Every structure is written in structure tokens, then in C-alpha cells.
Length: 580
Image (spheres, helix red, strand yellow):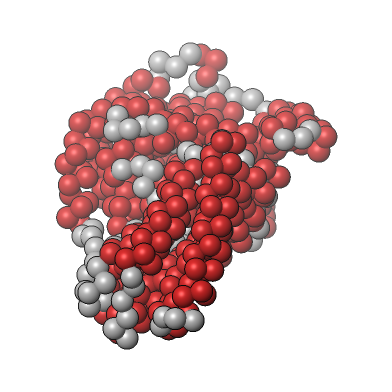
């Protein structure tokens, strides 16, 4: 029991260090990571390099793939582009194996504590990017410390039972490994399944890899170094499949394209594992032969169990396997995309709109820190487009006064209800984001985004009230004069310009001349409303009061729309949100 707790504790330090390091790198390099992902533009080879670079930074292929799912979910990456990034992420995660193999040749504690010592004062004294850099360094040191503790906690089965308290644990390990070992090729399949289970339990392929190599070099799998390597390689294949589950689970709350990206990740890794199982025996032999030609400084001092060769051979196997898998399948990205499109059919309502609601997908699986905000940005842009569509629906209804509006009213009512759900989902999501450890800049951005969402929802309410007024006019048989119709179209044209400016400059700094222009448009609508309503009041003494009241209500709602547009522009300008 004591040994198990020590291993769990060491694993906890390792995962916590990875989390701190990942959050730190996202804060000082997150904008560049997002820009790199968003600039792929159909180039699958650039996508592979971007995935490799991103995963190398955050040290988690799961984080990269969940980020990719998020980008696909909001339309910043296409399905084809996402597959290239996922391929690169698979290669990037092999860095962990090399770290674990390399650090076995020197004292981890001797470097881990000094690294934390360097990062600690930077984190507490530094501000902005420097503070984030300090956080990254501290996390890096904790990662090494966790690996050191894991190395010490795992019993060494090569030299027998070193500690009396480890006796029961060692015997249990030997018993279970003995049950699935010694069955030839079938044993490798069993160990591969064990790798899948291990990755599902720890929810990190990097942590699973560290555990696997540590156990291999301590003789858990076999007393023969070559056999120990082959078993560890089989476990690595299982981890390759297990790591796809994180993105799969994350995609459950996402749209169809995001689900397809997660399935593409799974399909890519399964195809690679299948062909590797077919050639596993000769391929493992080739890799072991390469490991025998390592420099003497990297080889084990004791040749009865070449632990360094086992570790480096596993790292070579992991990297070579992924390189070949990418080199072959990168040419078949369109075919993979076509397959997952058939696997995951579109889920749309009768009007062709995607029915998936926004979900804060990453807090249960991988914490993307500030990179979570990209999901909310995409949802807000969709909400702005939604508002534009509703206003166009009002204009069309107004320009066709003799048309029965019952079906249009029903559709716009549904759109207004969808806008209410959007506001609820996005606000809840942003509240979740605000609970993370954010920079002051992003905290301010979230506050601005919450205000923008509220204003957009009020805009859709105004538009729906406008359509209801048109419906009342139709049902009562009221007709506007040509003069009234002309006036409403004039003010609606001005409001349309304001809404277009909102859609063009949403969630980014707004040029001063654009802000001034929207403010001028808002003043113009206010003056038009006052002027037109004064005319209507004068006509009430002689004309139909009910028609004039409808007319003034429409003017008032249009002026409110202009107010909301100006508020949105000011909120976007006050925040320093930049378009990805």
C-alpha cells in the first residue's frame, strides 16, 4: 500500500508540474499558438508542424487535440486542416519518451530543485509575460521532480526485492504480469490493451509513457532487456489509442465537425496501431538493433539488464512509428476526412442550422486555460450573425406588407429563443473561464464579452418585437402611407449600417473613425426617431391613432437597436480582444 501511494504521489507531482507548465506557456505564448493554428489554411504539412510545435510547448497531445476540437467547433479550422494538426500532435508527444530516457543518466533531483528555484522568484516578483514565464519554469521543474520521485517509488525488480515493505507489491506485480506474459505474440496484444486502460486511468499519454518506461527499466515486464522493450513498445501502442479518448469525450458537447475531428484522431491512431501490430516483431527487432549502437555514454553500465537501451529503444520506437505513420497517412487526409463524414452524419434541424449548443468542454478533461476563450469568441460571432439574420428577416417582412407572416413569425420566434439559449450558454461558459487563473487582460476581455452577449440578446429581442409589430399591422389590416413606409426604411437603413459595423469589428479593437461613425449613426437614428414621431403625433389628430402608434413603436425599436450596436462597439473597443 505504501508503495502504491508513493507512486500515486509521484504521478501527482508529475501531472501537477505538467499542468502548471502548460498554463504558463499558454499565458505567454497562447496568442501565437492560436495564430499559428488559425493560419494553417489547408496546408496539411504546415498543420503537422504546427501540431508538433504546439504539443512540444504544452507537453500534452490531449491538450492540443482538445484545442483542435475547440477550433473546429467554432469554425476556425476545417476538418481537413485539423487532421494535419492531430498528426503533428502525435509526433510531439513522443518528446516525453526522450525526456524520460535521457534523464535516467543523471540525478533528477539535482536539476529539478534548482529549476524550481529559478522560476519561483520570477513567478512571484514578475508581472505579465515574466510572471507566466516563471510559472512555466516552476512547472518544468516540478515535472522533473515528479519523474525523479516516480523513479524512486517504482520497485526495482531487476535486482530482486530491495525493500521488505515492497515484497507484497512485487509479488502481485509478478503474478499479474506472469498471467498475460509468456504467450508469444498474444501477450503483446494483451499489453497493448493494458496501455489503453492505463491511459484512460491517468488521462495523460505523457504520464502513461513515463510510467511505462520507468517500469520497463526497473524490470517489471521481463528479466530480459529485449523482451522488456518489446512489451513496453506494445504498451506504448495501446497508449496511442487511449489518448484519443480525451478528444472524443471533449467532442460530445461540440458540433458535427468537431466530433468528426475527434473521430479522425481515433481513426488515424487505430490505423497506425493495426499496421504496426502486423510488423511488430521485425520492427521491434530493428529498433532494438539501432539502440545497441547508442554512444557508450548513454548505455547501461550493467549489461545483465540494459535499462538505458530499454528506455532509448522505447523512445526510438515511439518516434519512428509516429513518423512513418504520418509519412504514409498524410497523403490520405482527404480519404480520412471522407470516412469520418460518413461515420458522423450532419445533425441539423429543418432549417439547416446546427443544433449543437455551446459547452465548456475542457474543464473535465484537459484544462486549456486562456485558450478556452476561443470557443466563446466563436460562439459570440455566431450570435452576431444570428442577430443580423433576424434583422434581415424583419426588413423582408416589412417590404412585403401583403404577405401572410405566420410562418416567418414562427421561424423568427424560434431564432429569438435560440438567441436566449446562446446568451445563457455563452455567459455560463465565460463564468467558467473566469474561474481559471487568467491574466488581467483576459479577465477584462471576459467582462467585455459578457456585456457584448447581453447587448446582442437585447438586439434580437428588439428585432422580434419589430416583427410582432409588423404581424399586428397585417392582422389588423392596417396600411402605412407611402410617407410612413419611406421613413421606416430610412431609419432601418441607418440601423443596418450600425449592425454591419458590429459584425465587421466584433471582438477586436475598433478604429477611432469607425467608433465615431457608429456614434454618428446612433445620433442620427435618435434624431430621426424624434422627428418622425413628432410628425406622427401631429397626424394623430386627423388620422388613425392605432396606425400612428404602430409607426412610432417601430421607430422606437429601431432606435433601440442602434443603441445596442453602439454599446457592443464600445465594449469591443474597451477590451483588447484580438481576432485569431
